[in-house]
Image 1 (tube, rainbow, N blue to C red):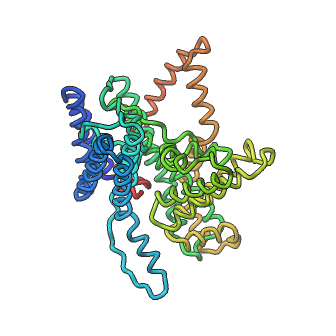
Image 2 (image 1 turned 60 degrees about the vertical axis):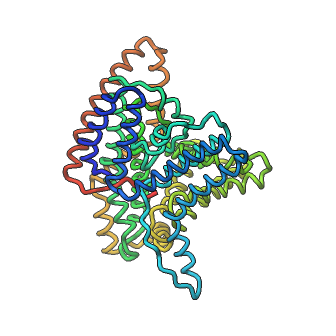
Image 3 (image 1 turned 90 degrees about the vertical axis):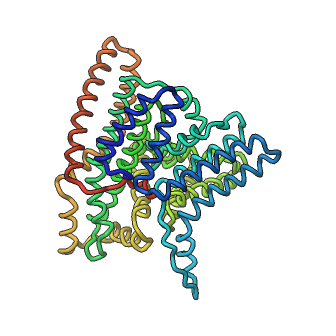
Length: 476
């Protein structure tokens, strides 16, 4: 994290909560949160605070100019170009140079530019603001502090969810906090922290062992175990951060959109992307897919639009051909799903199994450092059926009882049964359809807070004995 986990949990967060409560009026609270957000970002990367501020200034000025300019389209286009230019320089310069260096007779050294944490997230938020103002001038912000808070708000600054300005503009101006909202937000925050520390980090150790092993050390057992562990690691890592961001936002009076809705219970890849990283999917839908024509210009154009979107989705995740191919993988499989007759599409458990196998295999590309590393994993997953002493030793080191039990817990927490229980509690009981509904909700609430308190204790013990372990999406 930008702060160490312990410093954030026990120093920064309590101080910010107290200051925001003591600040007079909504403008005072906004100013406190904006300044604290800059301090949060600058603690780990002080030099890049200027870059973050430059992004805010560019988008603030662009929004004001769009309203006043005669050629609004030109102003918006320049602002989009500046945003993408900043992202391109810091994220993709070395990727482009490295690709050119592969050409015969070309020898280009990388620049070594450090990637600013969260640049993909705050750049996309700035882009959405400018585009929204271009589409609807009433969306413009006349307060620089208000826009700075929108772009830099620390709970979701580093790894999302990506928030659209029109979704939080009114909340920045008018919001309220209460003990109940604060407690609910704290519970959600603890849930996310537990996902990261207790689940993701545990299976992540096994995944790291597989993806850093040599060909001689791998066999089918360890390769598949590593792939499944990473599939669970990235879900609980990223959904855990989203839970933390949503919980923190709630503590300060903000209601952020859900970013995950049990994606590992999906029966198709299309359904998976409706549930996985929802804020990114909706961003690309609103600002790229629909402007390209969406599905309104025939089957061939729709297919091309989807490929373009998934190419950009892969490239957004990282400056590497691994990420580009990962995005194209998902786009290609989605086109295959569209081409299949309705009667032949996998459904039910069969559809879920096929989808999860597709996702698991794609995440090998996502995790591997190089295409060669991904190829090595694929080769061993499908041909490594002759274990050696080395590969057996690696599999034993990876498959500790703690890892197996944690994997079992991951499956229980992310599967369809969890979704069914969640919907049941939200629906029948929460709406009081049964006579005992209110009582069951009360019991559930009390048990959930007790469980959160227990999980917080486990997280504190984990922090005391663990090394620095950042969230995966910090590097995007």
